[in-house]
Image (tube, rainbow, N blue to C red; front, side):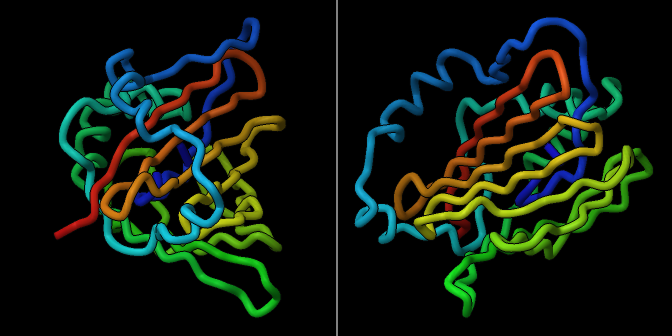
Length: 202
């Protein structure tokens, strides 16, 4: 999840069994993204910004459907929802605070689905305080991990279940692309990781 760009305000359902990591991306997706995973200095990272409007880049992408199912979306609706979310643009704005911390605003189109799915618009997540996120399964507490760069931020959403969390990371790849990584960690069972690449809107 809870998208995103669209900020998904869901968190996942727990499953039993030993903890394993399930990557909801295909092998070719991972191979194709290796070039973006080279270590970069802080100086380089600080020249890249997440600010702006972003749309999903063409080509292979992570399976958002798997993530939606993991956080509790009904399986029958997960496919159509994933396609709808793929068409959404994301507006990101990294905000420097007077106390030296940072916040990030994530805005996506507000939808009126007659389904048990909610999106959060104009959400601002702070390093120093929690934001309450309402989901169909209960409230989450969301906060921004301390970030050293305007080009790499992670939102942590805890709950609704005890021990459950969603990590939502945005990382600048270059001046024209960002990577979104969504991780659902249930209280027990498999975690699901989805990576998608967005390009700057024209």
